[in-house]
Length: 141
Figure (cartoon, rainbow, N blue to C red):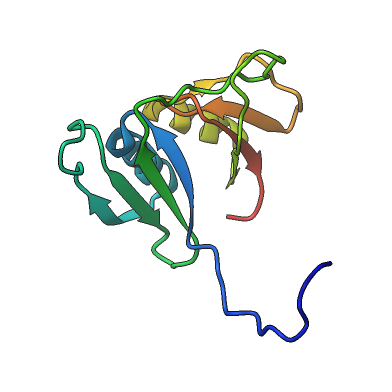
């Protein structure tokens, strides 16, 4: 695989997945309420940048990998499903819920919308307030 067998691999872990947004604090607030996670880092706008600039990290109360949100003035929401000329989705979140209908209702009450295209009967594709797709499915929570 092109690896030098004489090089010792350093310890690594994924700290967080990061979603871009024109309003990272609002998007972090949405996921904080949806997931019941807490803000562990909130960085203000950098000097000379827009007041909307900043970076926020959420983490589950149980610990583990986090979810972060960063400012991107040029953010464009992906199309779902995307065509050849559309902004492509780079990542989406899979979120387990105890009850699919209740999960959808709760997400919508927080500001998410149900995507028009639903490719599976047992999964609901949702769009967060910034337009990032995420999937709700029944699974261990």
